[in-house]
Amino acid sequence: MTIHGPADGWVESPDGRRFWGRAGAAGLLAVDPDDRVLLQHRAEWSHFGGTWGLPGGARQFDESAVDGALRESGEEAAVPGESLRLLFASELDLGFWSYTTIAARVRTPFTAVVSDAESLELRWVPRSDIDTLPLHPGFATSWPGLSAHLDTDLHLVVDAANVVGSRPDGWWRDRAGAATRLLGDLSAAIDGGLPSALFVDAPASGPGAPTSWWPSTTVVLEGEARQATGPAEGLLVDRADADGDAAVVARVESILTSSEEARVVVVTADRGLAARVERLGADVVGPTRLLDALVRT
Image (cartoon, rainbow, N blue to C red; front, side):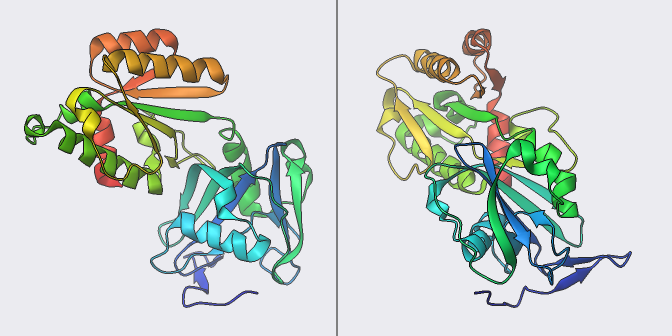
C-alpha cells in the first residue's frame, strides 16, 4: 500500500518537464546470483506508464538516497534490505531535482511481490535482455553506464599506521586511541558510501556513472594500534601479528587471486609498500585522499 507523505509531489523544471519527488527520488538496481535485474512494469496510469524501470520513488525529507531506495523497493516489491550487498550509487543531479540509483548484489535470493498499485508486474530480467524491453526513459539513458560497473568487485585496503601518522593530532601519545578514531570515522563514512574520487583520479562521468561506492574494506593495524576498540561496522580489521606491511601485501594477494573481477585500492604513502602492492596489480592512493573523503562524508 502506498502512503503519501509531505515529499510526494511534482517538481517542474525551467523547461516545463515534471519530476516526481519534492526531495528528489531514488531507485534500487538489484542484481541476483543469476545475473538478473529486478524490474518493475509500471502501471499505465503512472508517469511513463507501461514502461519498465527500477523499483523506487520519492525520497522523504531528511532521508538518505540509500534509505529511500530501500524503503521504496520494500513497499513496492517486498525487497528485504538485509538480503543485499550495496555496490555503488549513481546520482543524477539537475540542481532543482535529483535521482539516485543504488546498485546492489543479492546475497540471499528472495521472491519479489507486487505490493501496491504502481506495478503491473515485477520480473527478474537477464541483463542481456533488458534492452529488448520498453524502458522508462530515465532508466534507458542510465542503463549502459550502470551496467558497465556492475561487475566491479571493489576492495579498499587501509594501511592504518600510515594514515594515522599522516595527521599531526598527537596520535603518538595514544596509538590505540588514534586507530579507534580512524575505525569509527571510516565505518561511519562507508555507511553512506565513499566518493568515487577516492578510488580514481578522474571518476567516470555521464548517465549511470558511479558517484560513490561501498567497497569491501580491510584495515590493517599493527603494534599498539592493535588494541583499538569501538565499533567497526562494515570493516574487516586485520590485527597484524608483526609486520603490518606484510599483512597488507598478503591481503592484496589473497583478494586478487580469489576474484578475477577484483580491483584493489591500497591507502598508503609508504613507497616501498606501494611498489610491492602495485607489482601485484593493486592501485595506490595517499592518506590525504582518504582523509578528505572522510571529511566530505
